[in-house]
Image (cartoon, rainbow, N blue to C red):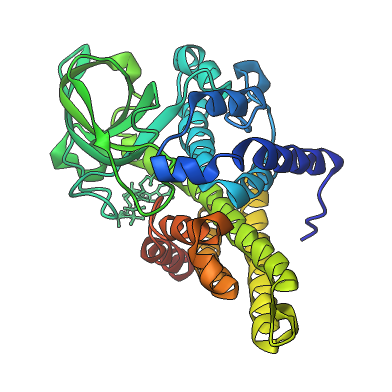
Length: 380
Ligand code: CAA
Protein backbone atom coordinates (compact mmCIF):
# COMPACT_ATOMS: atom_id res chain seq x y z
CA UNK A 1 0.00 0.00 0.00
CA UNK A 2 1.22 3.50 -0.83
CA UNK A 3 1.37 5.64 2.29
CA UNK A 4 2.69 8.80 0.61
CA UNK A 5 1.14 11.66 2.53
CA UNK A 6 -0.90 14.27 0.68
CA UNK A 7 -0.16 18.01 0.89
CA UNK A 8 -3.02 18.34 3.35
CA UNK A 9 -1.72 15.49 5.52
CA UNK A 10 1.77 17.00 5.54
CA UNK A 11 0.27 20.30 6.69
CA UNK A 12 -1.66 18.56 9.49
CA UNK A 13 1.52 16.76 10.53
CA UNK A 14 3.42 20.06 10.66
CA UNK A 15 0.61 21.80 12.57
CA UNK A 16 0.57 19.00 15.17
CA UNK A 17 4.37 19.06 15.41
CA UNK A 18 4.39 22.85 15.90
CA UNK A 19 1.66 22.70 18.51
CA UNK A 20 3.47 19.93 20.38
CA UNK A 21 6.80 21.80 20.32
CA UNK A 22 5.46 25.27 21.10
CA UNK A 23 2.54 24.57 23.40
CA UNK A 24 2.89 21.08 24.88
CA UNK A 25 6.64 20.80 25.46
CA UNK A 26 6.89 23.81 27.79
CA UNK A 27 5.47 22.61 31.08
CA UNK A 28 5.18 18.93 30.20
CA UNK A 29 7.47 17.90 33.09
CA UNK A 30 5.58 20.09 35.53
CA UNK A 31 2.20 18.78 34.37
CA UNK A 32 3.49 15.23 34.84
CA UNK A 33 4.67 16.07 38.36
CA UNK A 34 1.57 17.95 39.44
CA UNK A 35 -0.90 15.70 37.57
CA UNK A 36 -2.57 18.68 35.96
CA UNK A 37 -3.64 19.72 32.49
CA UNK A 38 -4.72 23.37 32.19
CA UNK A 39 -8.07 24.10 30.54
CA UNK A 40 -6.25 26.77 28.49
CA UNK A 41 -4.39 23.99 26.64
CA UNK A 42 -7.63 22.08 26.08
CA UNK A 43 -9.15 25.25 24.60
CA UNK A 44 -6.17 25.67 22.24
CA UNK A 45 -6.39 22.04 21.09
CA UNK A 46 -10.06 22.64 20.38
CA UNK A 47 -9.38 25.86 18.45
CA UNK A 48 -6.87 24.07 16.26
CA UNK A 49 -9.39 21.33 15.53
CA UNK A 50 -7.57 18.48 17.28
CA UNK A 51 -10.57 17.47 19.40
CA UNK A 52 -12.99 16.77 16.56
CA UNK A 53 -10.71 15.85 13.70
CA UNK A 54 -12.95 13.24 12.07
CA UNK A 55 -16.27 14.89 12.82
CA UNK A 56 -18.23 16.26 9.86
CA UNK A 57 -17.83 20.02 9.43
CA UNK A 58 -21.58 20.51 9.84
CA UNK A 59 -21.15 19.44 13.49
CA UNK A 60 -18.14 21.69 14.04
CA UNK A 61 -15.47 19.10 13.24
CA UNK A 62 -12.51 19.23 10.87
CA UNK A 63 -14.03 16.61 8.52
CA UNK A 64 -10.74 14.75 8.11
CA UNK A 65 -10.03 11.05 7.66
CA UNK A 66 -8.56 8.59 10.13
CA UNK A 67 -5.14 8.73 8.45
CA UNK A 68 -4.90 12.47 9.11
CA UNK A 69 -5.98 11.84 12.68
CA UNK A 70 -3.29 9.20 13.37
CA UNK A 71 -0.63 11.43 11.82
CA UNK A 72 -1.59 14.20 14.25
CA UNK A 73 -1.83 11.72 17.15
CA UNK A 74 1.73 10.54 16.48
CA UNK A 75 3.13 14.08 16.61
CA UNK A 76 1.26 15.07 19.79
CA UNK A 77 2.24 11.81 21.49
CA UNK A 78 5.95 12.32 20.80
CA UNK A 79 5.80 15.15 23.32
CA UNK A 80 2.81 14.65 25.61
CA UNK A 81 0.83 11.43 25.81
CA UNK A 82 -1.46 12.97 28.44
CA UNK A 83 -2.64 15.49 25.85
CA UNK A 84 -2.96 12.87 23.16
CA UNK A 85 -5.10 10.49 25.21
CA UNK A 86 -7.57 13.32 25.69
CA UNK A 87 -7.52 13.85 21.91
CA UNK A 88 -7.95 10.12 21.31
CA UNK A 89 -10.85 9.55 23.71
CA UNK A 90 -12.70 12.67 22.58
CA UNK A 91 -12.25 11.88 18.87
CA UNK A 92 -12.40 8.10 18.59
CA UNK A 93 -14.70 7.09 21.38
CA UNK A 94 -16.98 10.00 22.23
CA UNK A 95 -17.37 12.01 19.00
CA UNK A 96 -17.21 8.99 16.68
CA UNK A 97 -19.69 7.03 18.80
CA UNK A 98 -22.15 9.92 18.88
CA UNK A 99 -21.78 10.84 15.22
CA UNK A 100 -22.15 7.24 14.05
CA UNK A 101 -24.93 6.01 16.33
CA UNK A 102 -26.49 9.10 17.95
CA UNK A 103 -29.82 10.66 17.00
CA UNK A 104 -29.88 14.02 15.25
CA UNK A 105 -31.07 15.60 18.52
CA UNK A 106 -28.14 14.05 20.42
CA UNK A 107 -25.71 15.31 17.79
CA UNK A 108 -27.18 18.82 17.88
CA UNK A 109 -27.10 18.87 21.66
CA UNK A 110 -23.65 17.38 22.30
CA UNK A 111 -21.53 16.68 19.24
CA UNK A 112 -20.84 20.23 18.05
CA UNK A 113 -19.68 21.34 21.49
CA UNK A 114 -17.53 18.21 21.82
CA UNK A 115 -15.99 18.52 18.37
CA UNK A 116 -14.96 22.15 18.90
CA UNK A 117 -13.52 21.42 22.34
CA UNK A 118 -16.02 23.71 24.06
CA UNK A 119 -16.58 20.66 26.26
CA UNK A 120 -14.88 17.28 26.33
CA UNK A 121 -16.26 13.80 26.78
CA UNK A 122 -15.50 10.54 28.55
CA UNK A 123 -16.19 6.91 27.67
CA UNK A 124 -17.22 4.80 30.64
CA UNK A 125 -17.03 1.02 30.23
CA UNK A 126 -14.50 -0.26 32.81
CA UNK A 127 -15.63 -1.15 36.30
CA UNK A 128 -13.91 -2.41 39.46
CA UNK A 129 -14.93 -5.96 38.47
CA UNK A 130 -15.28 -5.59 34.71
CA UNK A 131 -12.13 -4.47 32.92
CA UNK A 132 -11.07 -6.91 30.22
CA UNK A 133 -14.23 -8.96 30.83
CA UNK A 134 -16.41 -6.15 29.56
CA UNK A 135 -19.68 -8.12 29.28
CA UNK A 136 -19.74 -8.52 33.10
CA UNK A 137 -21.17 -5.05 33.67
CA UNK A 138 -22.38 -4.52 37.24
CA UNK A 139 -23.63 -0.99 36.64
CA UNK A 140 -27.37 -1.15 36.10
CA UNK A 141 -29.71 1.04 34.09
CA UNK A 142 -33.18 -0.11 35.08
CA UNK A 143 -35.99 0.77 32.68
CA UNK A 144 -38.52 2.97 34.49
CA UNK A 145 -40.70 3.87 31.54
CA UNK A 146 -39.64 7.37 30.49
CA UNK A 147 -36.19 7.10 32.08
CA UNK A 148 -33.48 4.71 33.23
CA UNK A 149 -32.35 4.55 36.84
CA UNK A 150 -28.57 4.31 36.80
CA UNK A 151 -26.59 2.74 39.67
CA UNK A 152 -22.99 1.58 39.90
CA UNK A 153 -19.33 2.56 39.68
CA UNK A 154 -17.02 3.10 36.71
CA UNK A 155 -13.24 2.96 37.08
CA UNK A 156 -10.14 4.52 35.48
CA UNK A 157 -12.18 6.96 33.42
CA UNK A 158 -10.05 9.21 31.22
CA UNK A 159 -11.16 12.89 31.35
CA UNK A 160 -13.13 11.78 34.44
CA UNK A 161 -13.45 15.22 36.01
CA UNK A 162 -12.69 17.48 33.04
CA UNK A 163 -15.49 15.98 30.95
CA UNK A 164 -18.99 17.42 30.77
CA UNK A 165 -20.52 14.52 28.81
CA UNK A 166 -20.12 10.82 29.64
CA UNK A 167 -21.06 7.82 27.52
CA UNK A 168 -21.89 5.20 30.15
CA UNK A 169 -22.36 1.49 29.45
CA UNK A 170 -24.78 -0.27 31.81
CA UNK A 171 -26.80 -3.46 32.15
CA UNK A 172 -30.56 -3.09 31.73
CA UNK A 173 -31.61 -6.73 31.49
CA UNK A 174 -29.24 -9.20 33.12
CA UNK A 175 -31.09 -12.21 31.64
CA UNK A 176 -30.19 -11.04 28.14
CA UNK A 177 -26.43 -10.92 28.89
CA UNK A 178 -24.51 -8.64 26.56
CA UNK A 179 -27.70 -8.06 24.54
CA UNK A 180 -29.28 -6.44 27.61
CA UNK A 181 -26.68 -3.67 27.86
CA UNK A 182 -27.30 0.01 26.96
CA UNK A 183 -25.13 3.05 26.29
CA UNK A 184 -26.43 6.24 27.92
CA UNK A 185 -25.40 9.88 27.71
CA UNK A 186 -24.86 11.35 31.16
CA UNK A 187 -24.19 15.00 31.88
CA UNK A 188 -22.02 16.32 34.67
CA UNK A 189 -24.19 17.66 37.45
CA UNK A 190 -27.03 15.15 37.10
CA UNK A 191 -28.40 14.37 40.55
CA UNK A 192 -26.79 11.27 42.05
CA UNK A 193 -23.68 11.44 39.83
CA UNK A 194 -20.44 11.83 41.80
CA UNK A 195 -16.80 11.92 40.74
CA UNK A 196 -14.19 10.15 42.87
CA UNK A 197 -10.67 11.46 43.63
CA UNK A 198 -8.05 11.64 40.87
CA UNK A 199 -6.00 8.46 40.43
CA UNK A 200 -2.27 8.81 41.26
CA UNK A 201 -0.75 7.06 38.25
CA UNK A 202 2.62 5.75 36.99
CA UNK A 203 2.31 7.51 33.63
CA UNK A 204 0.11 9.85 31.58
CA UNK A 205 -0.05 11.75 34.84
CA UNK A 206 -1.36 14.91 33.19
CA UNK A 207 -4.40 12.94 32.08
CA UNK A 208 -7.36 13.24 34.40
CA UNK A 209 -8.38 9.74 35.57
CA UNK A 210 -11.20 9.18 38.06
CA UNK A 211 -13.76 6.67 39.18
CA UNK A 212 -17.40 7.72 38.78
CA UNK A 213 -20.29 6.85 41.08
CA UNK A 214 -23.92 6.71 40.02
CA UNK A 215 -26.54 6.55 42.71
CA UNK A 216 -30.14 6.52 41.42
CA UNK A 217 -29.33 8.86 38.53
CA UNK A 218 -32.46 9.48 36.44
CA UNK A 219 -31.43 9.31 32.78
CA UNK A 220 -34.08 10.34 30.21
CA UNK A 221 -34.83 7.67 27.60
CA UNK A 222 -33.80 10.05 24.81
CA UNK A 223 -30.23 9.81 26.17
CA UNK A 224 -29.91 6.18 25.09
CA UNK A 225 -27.63 5.63 22.08
CA UNK A 226 -29.09 3.25 19.52
CA UNK A 227 -31.78 0.61 20.01
CA UNK A 228 -32.50 -1.02 23.35
CA UNK A 229 -29.74 -3.58 24.02
CA UNK A 230 -27.24 -2.06 21.56
CA UNK A 231 -24.88 -0.85 24.31
CA UNK A 232 -22.31 -3.65 24.20
CA UNK A 233 -22.05 -3.64 20.43
CA UNK A 234 -21.77 0.15 20.62
CA UNK A 235 -18.83 -0.22 23.03
CA UNK A 236 -17.10 -2.86 20.88
CA UNK A 237 -17.55 -0.99 17.60
CA UNK A 238 -16.39 2.26 19.17
CA UNK A 239 -13.39 0.62 20.81
CA UNK A 240 -12.35 -0.99 17.52
CA UNK A 241 -11.70 2.53 16.19
CA UNK A 242 -10.39 3.77 19.53
CA UNK A 243 -7.65 1.17 19.34
CA UNK A 244 -6.33 2.80 16.15
CA UNK A 245 -6.00 6.08 18.07
CA UNK A 246 -4.13 4.40 20.94
CA UNK A 247 -1.92 2.57 18.43
CA UNK A 248 -1.02 5.99 16.99
CA UNK A 249 -0.33 7.25 20.49
CA UNK A 250 2.00 4.30 21.12
CA UNK A 251 3.71 4.94 17.79
CA UNK A 252 4.26 8.58 18.80
CA UNK A 253 5.72 7.63 22.18
CA UNK A 254 8.10 5.20 20.45
CA UNK A 255 9.09 7.74 17.80
CA UNK A 256 9.55 10.47 20.40
CA UNK A 257 11.81 8.26 22.53
CA UNK A 258 13.78 7.18 19.46
CA UNK A 259 14.32 10.75 18.24
CA UNK A 260 15.64 11.78 21.68
CA UNK A 261 17.92 8.73 21.84
CA UNK A 262 19.25 9.35 18.32
CA UNK A 263 20.07 12.98 19.09
CA UNK A 264 21.66 12.12 22.43
CA UNK A 265 23.79 9.36 20.96
CA UNK A 266 25.30 11.78 18.45
CA UNK A 267 26.23 14.27 21.18
CA UNK A 268 27.26 12.18 24.16
CA UNK A 269 30.86 10.99 24.07
CA UNK A 270 32.32 7.89 25.75
CA UNK A 271 35.59 6.06 25.16
CA UNK A 272 36.79 8.89 22.92
CA UNK A 273 33.89 9.08 20.47
CA UNK A 274 30.16 9.82 20.21
CA UNK A 275 28.28 6.84 21.62
CA UNK A 276 26.42 6.39 18.30
CA UNK A 277 29.75 5.18 16.92
CA UNK A 278 29.70 2.21 19.27
CA UNK A 279 27.99 -0.77 17.69
CA UNK A 280 26.20 -1.51 20.97
CA UNK A 281 24.30 1.77 20.58
CA UNK A 282 24.07 1.82 16.77
CA UNK A 283 22.39 -1.61 16.73
CA UNK A 284 19.86 -0.50 19.34
CA UNK A 285 19.02 2.49 17.11
CA UNK A 286 18.72 0.21 14.08
CA UNK A 287 16.26 -2.06 15.91
CA UNK A 288 14.24 0.88 17.20
CA UNK A 289 14.01 2.51 13.77
CA UNK A 290 12.96 -0.74 12.06
CA UNK A 291 10.28 -1.59 14.60
CA UNK A 292 8.87 1.94 14.60
CA UNK A 293 8.58 1.89 10.82
CA UNK A 294 6.82 -1.50 10.98
CA UNK A 295 4.44 -0.14 13.64
CA UNK A 296 3.76 2.94 11.50
CA UNK A 297 2.77 0.73 8.59
CA UNK A 298 0.32 -1.21 10.75
CA UNK A 299 -1.17 2.00 12.16
CA UNK A 300 -1.53 3.60 8.71
CA UNK A 301 -3.01 0.36 7.32
CA UNK A 302 -5.66 0.27 10.05
CA UNK A 303 -6.46 3.96 9.48
CA UNK A 304 -6.74 3.41 5.72
CA UNK A 305 -9.00 0.38 6.30
CA UNK A 306 -11.32 2.55 8.37
CA UNK A 307 -11.27 5.35 5.81
CA UNK A 308 -12.03 2.98 2.94
CA UNK A 309 -14.99 1.39 4.71
CA UNK A 310 -13.21 -1.97 5.09
CA UNK A 311 -13.40 -3.88 8.37
CA UNK A 312 -10.73 -2.56 10.72
CA UNK A 313 -11.26 -4.65 13.86
CA UNK A 314 -8.36 -6.96 13.00
CA UNK A 315 -5.98 -4.36 11.57
CA UNK A 316 -6.73 -1.99 14.49
CA UNK A 317 -6.04 -4.72 17.06
CA UNK A 318 -2.79 -5.70 15.31
CA UNK A 319 -1.70 -2.07 15.14
CA UNK A 320 -2.42 -1.51 18.84
CA UNK A 321 -0.78 -4.76 19.93
CA UNK A 322 2.40 -4.18 17.97
CA UNK A 323 2.74 -0.41 18.38
CA UNK A 324 2.25 -0.60 22.14
CA UNK A 325 4.86 -3.34 22.49
CA UNK A 326 7.26 -1.26 20.37
CA UNK A 327 6.51 1.83 22.47
CA UNK A 328 7.47 0.03 25.68
CA UNK A 329 10.56 -1.59 24.20
CA UNK A 330 11.76 1.57 22.49
CA UNK A 331 11.22 3.78 25.53
CA UNK A 332 13.17 1.35 27.74
CA UNK A 333 16.04 1.32 25.22
CA UNK A 334 15.96 5.12 24.96
CA UNK A 335 16.45 5.34 28.72
CA UNK A 336 19.31 2.83 28.46
CA UNK A 337 21.03 4.85 25.71
CA UNK A 338 20.75 7.97 27.89
CA UNK A 339 22.39 6.07 30.81
CA UNK A 340 22.17 7.98 34.10
CA UNK A 341 20.68 10.99 32.33
CA UNK A 342 17.83 8.82 31.12
CA UNK A 343 16.77 8.36 34.72
CA UNK A 344 16.44 12.11 35.19
CA UNK A 345 13.21 13.93 34.35
CA UNK A 346 14.82 16.73 32.31
CA UNK A 347 15.75 14.30 29.54
CA UNK A 348 12.10 13.30 28.96
CA UNK A 349 12.72 9.62 28.16
CA UNK A 350 11.85 8.34 31.64
CA UNK A 351 8.41 9.99 31.27
CA UNK A 352 7.93 8.43 27.84
CA UNK A 353 8.86 5.05 29.36
CA UNK A 354 6.24 5.49 32.11
CA UNK A 355 3.67 6.74 29.59
CA UNK A 356 4.32 3.84 27.21
CA UNK A 357 3.12 1.23 29.72
CA UNK A 358 -0.53 2.30 29.62
CA UNK A 359 -0.74 1.72 25.86
CA UNK A 360 -0.38 -2.01 26.58
CA UNK A 361 -3.29 -1.81 29.02
CA UNK A 362 -6.07 0.63 28.09
CA UNK A 363 -8.64 0.23 25.33
CA UNK A 364 -7.96 -3.50 25.58
CA UNK A 365 -4.77 -5.01 26.99
CA UNK A 366 -2.25 -6.71 24.71
CA UNK A 367 -3.81 -10.00 25.79
CA UNK A 368 -7.28 -8.79 24.72
CA UNK A 369 -5.85 -7.72 21.34
CA UNK A 370 -4.52 -11.27 20.94
CA UNK A 371 -8.03 -12.61 21.65
CA UNK A 372 -9.47 -10.29 18.99
CA UNK A 373 -6.74 -11.16 16.47
CA UNK A 374 -6.81 -14.91 17.04
CA UNK A 375 -10.62 -15.08 16.89
CA UNK A 376 -10.56 -13.10 13.67
CA UNK A 377 -7.99 -15.32 11.94
CA UNK A 378 -9.49 -18.55 13.26
CA UNK A 379 -13.02 -17.61 12.21
CA UNK A 380 -11.95 -16.60 8.72
N1 CAA B 1 -17.74 -5.15 16.62
C1 CAA B 1 -19.06 -5.48 16.73
N2 CAA B 1 -19.52 -6.40 17.59
C2 CAA B 1 -18.62 -7.03 18.37
C3 CAA B 1 -17.24 -6.75 18.30
C4 CAA B 1 -16.82 -5.76 17.38
N3 CAA B 1 -15.52 -5.41 17.26
N4 CAA B 1 -16.60 -7.53 19.20
C5 CAA B 1 -17.54 -8.29 19.80
N5 CAA B 1 -18.75 -7.97 19.29
C6 CAA B 1 -20.04 -8.56 19.64
C7 CAA B 1 -20.08 -10.04 19.31
O1 CAA B 1 -20.47 -10.25 17.96
C8 CAA B 1 -21.13 -10.56 20.27
O2 CAA B 1 -22.41 -10.28 19.80
P1 CAA B 1 -23.41 -11.46 19.26
O3 CAA B 1 -23.45 -12.48 20.36
O4 CAA B 1 -24.67 -10.75 19.02
O5 CAA B 1 -22.74 -11.97 18.02
C9 CAA B 1 -20.92 -9.66 21.48
O6 CAA B 1 -20.25 -8.50 21.05
C10 CAA B 1 -20.12 -10.34 22.58
O7 CAA B 1 -18.88 -10.72 22.00
P2 CAA B 1 -18.01 -11.90 22.58
O8 CAA B 1 -18.85 -13.12 22.76
O9 CAA B 1 -16.81 -12.02 21.71
O10 CAA B 1 -17.67 -11.35 24.04
P3 CAA B 1 -16.54 -11.76 25.06
O11 CAA B 1 -17.13 -11.72 26.41
O12 CAA B 1 -15.86 -13.02 24.61
O13 CAA B 1 -15.53 -10.51 25.02
C11 CAA B 1 -13.83 -9.07 24.20
C12 CAA B 1 -15.02 -9.98 23.88
C13 CAA B 1 -13.23 -8.71 22.85
C14 CAA B 1 -12.79 -9.77 25.07
C15 CAA B 1 -14.36 -7.80 24.91
O14 CAA B 1 -14.89 -8.10 26.17
C16 CAA B 1 -13.31 -6.72 25.03
O15 CAA B 1 -13.01 -6.02 24.08
N6 CAA B 1 -12.74 -6.53 26.27
C17 CAA B 1 -11.82 -5.43 26.51
C18 CAA B 1 -12.55 -4.20 26.96
C19 CAA B 1 -11.76 -2.94 26.72
O16 CAA B 1 -11.13 -2.76 25.69
N7 CAA B 1 -11.83 -2.03 27.68
C20 CAA B 1 -11.21 -0.78 27.51
C21 CAA B 1 -11.91 0.23 28.35
S1 CAA B 1 -12.13 1.75 27.56
C22 CAA B 1 -10.72 2.65 27.78
O17 CAA B 1 -9.70 2.17 28.17
C23 CAA B 1 -10.89 4.06 27.38
C24 CAA B 1 -9.96 5.04 27.99
O18 CAA B 1 -10.34 5.74 28.87
C25 CAA B 1 -8.63 5.26 27.39
